[in-house]
Length: 426
Ligand SMILES: [Mn+2]
Image 1 (tube, protein in one colour):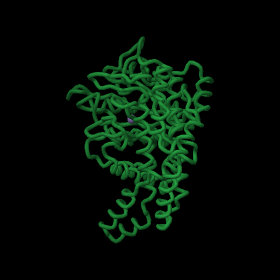
Image 2 (spheres, protein in one colour):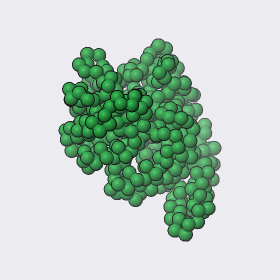
Image 3 (cartoon, rainbow, N blue to C red):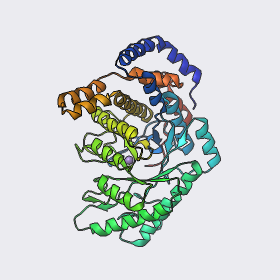
Image 4 (cartoon, rainbow, N blue to C red):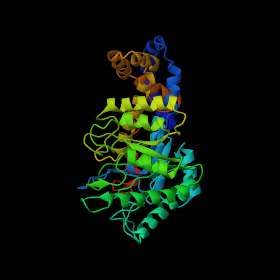
């Protein structure tokens, strides 16, 4: 289904007067502080986050998967769903594909479909964490870091294949996340496993088109529970350095042990010009895949503070690939993604409000109290009218969740696709 612009505008019209009051009140307060409100609104409009193809259906746990009605069962339908998200929020202008789950059959038709909805193809993701039907060698004991060179060669070839598919869609980066590791002490030789992984990544990197980036993701545990070969940002950074300039580290919020200072990792990587991408989600305990901003919104704000600082002060860092990486078990996946997109924009807007000059001055005289006040003054500002204004200006919804419900999008999808329609993928 496609959203009717006219119906969306009618819903917006009902709330326009109240929105103008809210926006004008906030804009006046911020302008008095010397903040350029228009600049912030246009920064918000420009900020686009990719939606991964696997987030559009209900996810599951290792115990069960309860599917959601009207899920997209083909690549075409997945693109349509991201189109709906983008029409409402105007901030989801890209889709990130997972290969082999989303191999296009007709490239021209897929490109035309995405183009008509204002969508680009962001990073492509390889999959060597599960076996596919008719696959020759198994990834049960690893892939790029496997002890057997034939398994490694197969995993390298798969990544090269993913790049070829991505090239035909206009993608410019490959994300590699490995499940490789061990579940028991003694199972792997750490050095051999790391050396094999480095060797495989170099082969992939050397085959990469010159205008492509390699994004190396890390994760401390799961699915392996004793060791992960690329366990942390340091290991990813080291591997990226040995591959070359266009190899970078990808930070996924959920891929850290509890209480890790993720904002400091972001800052360090950007200073070294090696932060290539960022995956958003939220968690209480581990890689929980919860809605962005649902558990730790202040931590997200502090991370955005470092991202904004890096984007403004670190020209050595490449342009970042942003993506939501979550899998929803309970909510309507599209509503969950709308909430995530809103949380990302909110944290970004608040970070843009930080008085960086005053913060540097307070830091210079070790005025710790003032430093905290400066950060929290920005954090405590209700920036939602700025987000609504950015959406209104670009043709989106003043209130995306309310509009989604009023337009009865899920009912339409169920009618079109059937209640039993299941998302392809996991
Ligand atoms: Mn991720």
